[in-house]
Image (cartoon, rainbow, N blue to C red):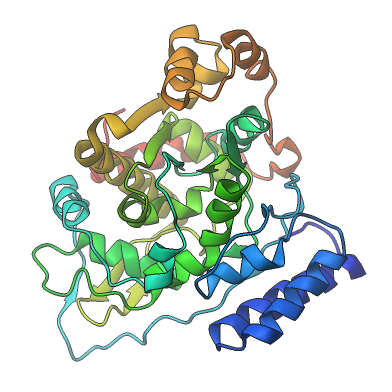
Length: 371
């Protein structure tokens, strides 16, 4: 994603990284490795071809891997394409409600048939962290806070997981008492392909991984299954503030989770027609209930942190975050850090959200929210 034209070097990077992904998924490991070597030769970021190859096969990591440095207007991620299964009008379809009890049930029994190498490449368990959120909650600021700590934080990644994979996992999490809810249609394993090199690289250089991209929130149960000591931070923000940010900066897109009508198995779906404002309200409510369901299951491996309190300099909230992560960051450092807003994107403001607030509140309450 970029607000401007790509440079020739950026286009080369995306071409090589995309070519490596396709070749690796097709089983052509030699070709994939050569593409990663070409990407590394550009010197734009940490590639570590041998570590990258662990996305597709069993082996030993050799070095860390980091995506191109995240900036406000330029995120170099390969857009992985996996089209959804065509919607089948001849079978029973579902339009379920947001139900935390159903989420809890499916999180508790979550166990997908993963490719063996994803397990085998993890030589020892570490308490990696995933940050769950809606986005527009201060995740970039959190990433910058933890840079240089015991964790290697990732906000941008080499590969952007397709919306079809996210919706597949979402539908499975929403299906009550389904015998097919835990059958992988490809989404779970594809997410591991798109993310595994990052935690394996962090572990190889003696650090823990911290994933801080809200697009990965729906994969939290998979992360917990693969990493038995993993922990979770739900970064919550006042829902009205989230809406204002999404709406005013015109950042709502089809790459976010949406309410869908879907079939049980194989998962196929189609979007439910509703306004942008209702879509945002639904998404915020889904994320709240799903994230808190993770907390109900994970117990002391999960905390909820208020983004509003962090940026207000609330010492108790900041201390809770620091104690949970135990990353060697002092309270004084964190207090100073949160004084300065990061990634506000004020230049992106295109619309006034205030006339829409009444409608947003109506839909937020419709889906069970309390303001």
